[in-house]
Image 1 (tube, rainbow, N blue to C red):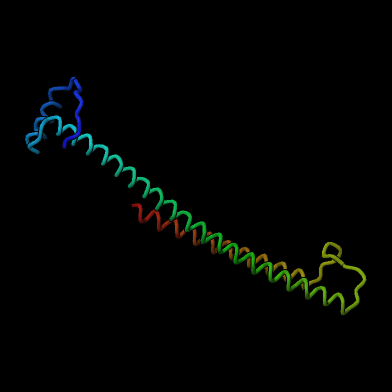
Image 2 (cartoon, one colour):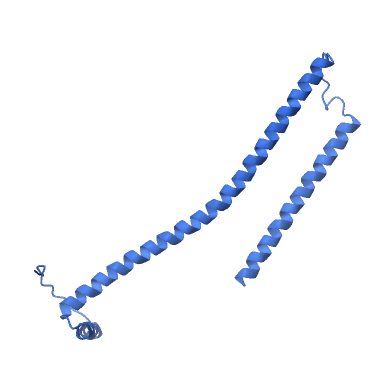
Length: 150
Protein backbone atom coordinates (compact mmCIF):
# COMPACT_ATOMS: atom_id res chain seq x y z
CA UNK A 1 0.00 0.00 0.00
CA UNK A 2 1.45 3.32 -1.06
CA UNK A 3 1.22 6.57 0.89
CA UNK A 4 -1.20 9.13 -0.46
CA UNK A 5 0.57 11.71 -2.56
CA UNK A 6 -0.37 15.34 -2.98
CA UNK A 7 0.03 17.37 -6.10
CA UNK A 8 2.50 20.31 -6.06
CA UNK A 9 3.08 22.70 -8.93
CA UNK A 10 6.49 24.37 -8.91
CA UNK A 11 8.59 26.26 -11.40
CA UNK A 12 12.16 25.02 -11.75
CA UNK A 13 15.14 26.06 -13.78
CA UNK A 14 15.70 23.93 -16.91
CA UNK A 15 18.99 22.61 -15.45
CA UNK A 16 17.22 21.42 -12.31
CA UNK A 17 14.54 19.67 -14.36
CA UNK A 18 17.27 17.88 -16.34
CA UNK A 19 18.98 16.78 -13.12
CA UNK A 20 15.71 15.42 -11.73
CA UNK A 21 15.13 13.52 -14.98
CA UNK A 22 18.70 12.10 -14.87
CA UNK A 23 18.23 10.90 -11.28
CA UNK A 24 14.86 9.36 -12.18
CA UNK A 25 16.37 7.56 -15.19
CA UNK A 26 19.36 6.26 -13.21
CA UNK A 27 17.20 4.99 -10.33
CA UNK A 28 14.39 3.77 -12.63
CA UNK A 29 11.78 5.74 -10.67
CA UNK A 30 9.37 8.55 -11.42
CA UNK A 31 10.45 12.18 -11.21
CA UNK A 32 8.26 12.60 -8.11
CA UNK A 33 10.03 9.66 -6.42
CA UNK A 34 13.42 11.10 -7.44
CA UNK A 35 12.50 14.44 -5.83
CA UNK A 36 11.24 12.66 -2.70
CA UNK A 37 14.47 10.66 -2.47
CA UNK A 38 16.57 13.83 -2.92
CA UNK A 39 14.64 15.60 -0.13
CA UNK A 40 15.00 12.58 2.18
CA UNK A 41 18.72 12.44 1.41
CA UNK A 42 19.02 16.17 2.19
CA UNK A 43 17.40 15.77 5.60
CA UNK A 44 19.41 12.65 6.45
CA UNK A 45 22.63 14.42 5.48
CA UNK A 46 21.66 17.50 7.50
CA UNK A 47 20.98 15.42 10.61
CA UNK A 48 24.25 13.52 10.13
CA UNK A 49 26.21 16.79 9.86
CA UNK A 50 24.53 18.01 13.05
CA UNK A 51 25.56 14.85 14.91
CA UNK A 52 29.15 15.12 13.63
CA UNK A 53 29.28 18.79 14.61
CA UNK A 54 27.85 18.02 18.05
CA UNK A 55 30.39 15.21 18.56
CA UNK A 56 33.25 17.49 17.54
CA UNK A 57 32.20 20.14 20.04
CA UNK A 58 31.75 17.50 22.74
CA UNK A 59 35.23 16.07 22.11
CA UNK A 60 36.77 19.53 22.16
CA UNK A 61 35.08 20.40 25.43
CA UNK A 62 36.13 17.07 26.98
CA UNK A 63 39.74 17.80 25.98
CA UNK A 64 39.67 21.28 27.50
CA UNK A 65 37.90 20.07 30.65
CA UNK A 66 40.48 17.31 31.12
CA UNK A 67 43.24 19.93 31.11
CA UNK A 68 41.35 22.06 33.60
CA UNK A 69 40.59 19.09 35.83
CA UNK A 70 44.27 18.15 35.89
CA UNK A 71 45.26 21.66 36.92
CA UNK A 72 42.51 21.83 39.54
CA UNK A 73 43.64 18.48 40.94
CA UNK A 74 47.21 19.74 41.22
CA UNK A 75 45.98 22.88 43.01
CA UNK A 76 43.87 20.77 45.36
CA UNK A 77 46.82 18.50 46.21
CA UNK A 78 49.05 21.52 46.82
CA UNK A 79 46.39 23.12 48.99
CA UNK A 80 46.07 19.92 51.05
CA UNK A 81 49.84 19.76 51.60
CA UNK A 82 49.97 23.42 52.64
CA UNK A 83 47.00 22.95 54.97
CA UNK A 84 48.61 19.90 56.60
CA UNK A 85 51.96 21.64 57.04
CA UNK A 86 50.29 24.73 58.50
CA UNK A 87 48.39 22.62 61.03
CA UNK A 88 51.59 20.84 62.04
CA UNK A 89 53.37 24.17 62.55
CA UNK A 90 50.47 25.53 64.61
CA UNK A 91 50.56 22.47 66.86
CA UNK A 92 54.32 22.79 67.23
CA UNK A 93 54.11 26.50 68.04
CA UNK A 94 51.33 25.93 70.57
CA UNK A 95 53.39 23.25 72.31
CA UNK A 96 56.54 25.41 72.22
CA UNK A 97 54.64 28.38 73.68
CA UNK A 98 53.16 26.20 76.43
CA UNK A 99 56.45 24.52 77.44
CA UNK A 100 58.40 27.82 77.60
CA UNK A 101 55.56 29.60 79.40
CA UNK A 102 55.73 32.67 77.15
CA UNK A 103 53.50 35.57 78.18
CA UNK A 104 53.62 37.67 74.98
CA UNK A 105 54.25 37.18 71.31
CA UNK A 106 57.00 39.12 69.57
CA UNK A 107 56.03 39.43 65.91
CA UNK A 108 58.41 39.72 62.98
CA UNK A 109 57.26 43.32 62.59
CA UNK A 110 58.84 44.06 66.00
CA UNK A 111 61.92 41.86 65.63
CA UNK A 112 63.13 39.57 62.84
CA UNK A 113 65.82 37.04 63.71
CA UNK A 114 68.65 36.14 61.38
CA UNK A 115 67.15 32.64 61.00
CA UNK A 116 63.79 34.08 59.99
CA UNK A 117 65.43 36.26 57.34
CA UNK A 118 67.33 33.23 55.98
CA UNK A 119 64.09 31.23 55.83
CA UNK A 120 62.31 34.05 53.94
CA UNK A 121 65.20 34.32 51.48
CA UNK A 122 65.16 30.56 50.91
CA UNK A 123 61.42 30.55 50.26
CA UNK A 124 61.74 33.48 47.83
CA UNK A 125 64.46 31.61 45.91
CA UNK A 126 62.28 28.49 45.72
CA UNK A 127 59.28 30.49 44.50
CA UNK A 128 61.43 32.20 41.86
CA UNK A 129 62.93 28.88 40.72
CA UNK A 130 59.49 27.25 40.49
CA UNK A 131 58.12 30.21 38.53
CA UNK A 132 61.06 30.06 36.11
CA UNK A 133 60.50 26.31 35.56
CA UNK A 134 56.84 26.98 34.83
CA UNK A 135 57.68 29.74 32.33
CA UNK A 136 60.25 27.50 30.60
CA UNK A 137 57.70 24.66 30.41
CA UNK A 138 55.03 26.94 28.92
CA UNK A 139 57.55 28.30 26.41
CA UNK A 140 58.53 24.77 25.29
CA UNK A 141 54.87 23.80 25.06
CA UNK A 142 54.12 26.85 22.91
CA UNK A 143 57.08 26.08 20.64
CA UNK A 144 55.85 22.49 20.20
CA UNK A 145 52.38 23.74 19.26
CA UNK A 146 53.81 26.20 16.76
CA UNK A 147 56.04 23.45 15.32
CA UNK A 148 53.10 21.07 14.92
CA UNK A 149 50.96 23.77 13.27
CA UNK A 150 53.65 24.57 10.70
